[in-house]
Image: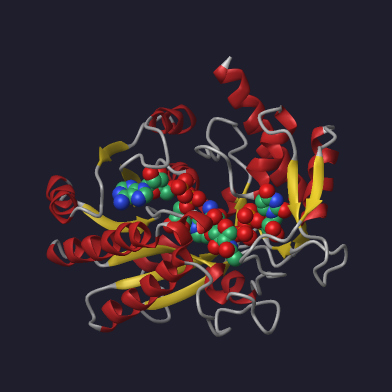
Length: 340
Ligand code: NAD
Ligand code: UD1
């Protein structure tokens, strides 16, 4: 069965393509390579033995998006990762984020309607909860006003999808990711941040390998055990596997309703200092870091209530923080080897 994976050369997309192929699906990847490299297609092929079909297309272009479906009339479902995702950048360039993330979604949904494709898995984010009043957050926890244009694109996208599902032409599962980190155990694919990373873990590994001088820890005066913010870090492989489960649930008509939302986290929160400690333990490296001012827009703490996703999907994140950090470090080392 042929599945379209948008953003499939990106970080989470590439890991999901591997899992889909290993579960027996045929995959077509579409990506405009704005935040990834075409070589990822070969890397996927190295792991699975099959390089997926690849189409270099900008999904914010409606004609190109339509053509994609014309070229692949046998697509049965779409997993939609393609989006711009840098929170700070979105504050500076909101229109680019709305154009890219919202137009791409609308173009895809219009084309799917024309070609009568009914199944859609969407990458949402725990950012829609903001700083929730109660922790852990459940799927039913009210969403808050978005803290950034990026976050708002996720909220708006969820609303668009819910509206379209109501018309009866679409079935959708929105997956709200917590903080995906780590890399494939083969160290053949992983996160490839372009420029200076915004996110904690690539910043840690790049500092340890000598690309960055020092990690800035953004604030230690939060109301948490060591004063640094808490997040629910989840191994990208656990996350990727949840997509295969969600897809099967839809294709086998096991959804409770045609519009479903699931939290994808581990249910455990870790502080920034705990993440650093785990990294130092598994890598044997001493990390150069300094506590600095809080980062604007950061929330204090969030972690997932995973009970509903675990029960309904029959899926559970199984990899712990040390395994996440070890795989992230192995990936950084592998990239260094490759770039020699
Ligand atoms: P990524 O940047 O590595 O992957 C996204 C891919 O989409 C990139 O390869 C990029 O080139 C492609 N893309 C962007 N706009 C496109 C367009 N108009 N047409 C075609 N391709 C386009 O990001 P990721 O970390 O793999 O994230 C995947 C999805 O998950 C995104 O929707 C993101 O918002 C969401 N998400 C990510 C995180 C995270 O922490 N990484 C957390 C929550 C949600
Ligand atoms: C953010 C977004 C999330 C988005 C994700 C991926 C929010 C609330 N969340 O997650 O929606 O999907 O980015 O882009 O906006 N930290 C440091 N030093 C650093 C980097 C990070 O101390 O150099 C700290 C942060 O303060 C935070 C933690 O590490 O406490 C994790 O940060 P990060 O990896 O950027 O993810 P989020 O901000 O949680």
